[in-house]
Amino acid sequence: MLAFIRLAIFGLIVLTVLFWLVRLYARSVRREALEEDWNEAAAEGRAETTRDTFVEAGMRDYEKSLLRKLIWLVYVLPIIVVGLIIYLMNYR
Image (cartoon, rainbow, N blue to C red; front, top):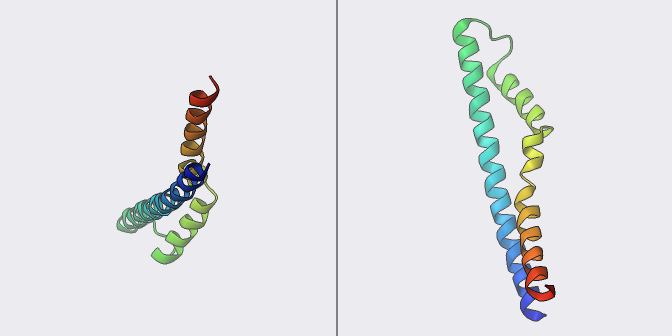
């Protein structure tokens, strides 16, 4: 039982670090895409707001998006897989 608790603690630490890395990466990719969209709109003369306003509005939309919520699968999937493996190895 002590080994399982140790696995759970270290596993959650690793998953937390992985979660934050994925979250920061996804946010930076989305921000870069928004900046490129604004640059293209400005080059064509379609930019209605400043760059910062456009990017911040896009990032607020991103915070409500499905993609941001899917990042939580970094926690859910490994826990389900480990739980399934433990169940299959011990109770089947």
